[in-house]
Length: 198
Image 1 (cartoon, rainbow, N blue to C red):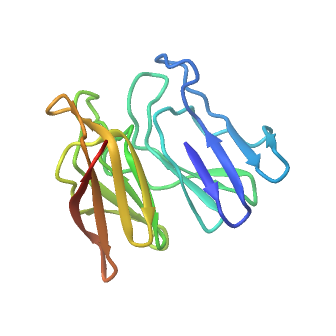
Image 2: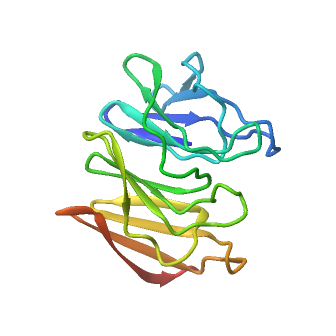
């Protein structure tokens, strides 16, 4: 997971699979200071190693759902890193295990989009929303096609998904998908295809 902390202008690299092999995930977290052009490597490890993860920053904390374990399974754990105390806690589990999902943060909410299912044999269209203030997960409007291993970002109240794989059709995505979040009901997202990839 690569996460930007805009409040302190720092970049975090968390977990991952350095050699791409099953069983080689790591629990490490590194912090990069772009002003000093230096890395800090003595931060507290995640409670357990994870690969195929994303992370999101909100108000001094980094949220890392699910991921791939060294036992060769995907996980529904939810790890939360507190930057000020350099410590990890575990939040409420994801409703279902996921890895290689898309992630977006909006207004105190963490969205986990698509990803690989618990059996590791299919992609998903689910969208789960974690409300930080209420400390709970809900289901949001699903995406129109299976999505995993793609790029995700957000601008304002809009989520963008780019690339990715539709495992059900054994095909890569050819279009960019945009999801506009309803400010009155953050579980309601209007998804629409907007452009073809080059």
